[in-house]
Image (cartoon, rainbow, N blue to C red; front, side, top):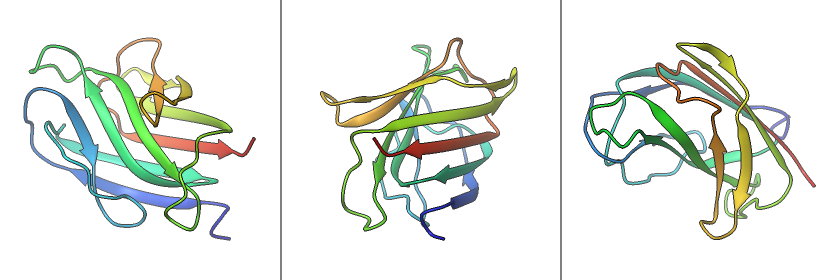
Length: 134
């Protein structure tokens, strides 16, 4: 059953800090990553087929902007240490403008998955990732 759905619900993120990115760092499969900027609020994160190793939001170039332009993440197999670099990752993002399905692809040069929206996100309240093995 562990392979079916890993629910990382109610991941709380607090404060607003400037330049860079926002990282979710908590238990239940998320590992610590440096957080240079944080978006205030709460978002529900669900993933099926894998575990999230790290999850980072990249903000607009303006350090005071609440717009998120990219999501970076690393995926791990159930053993918690084997990185997932192939397969298909889909994402449904619920944000201020509704629900969108961005393009997600693995970047071997950056050793992470990158999800790019068709338009910047604001006020993200839910992320639903689905990973399928190649």
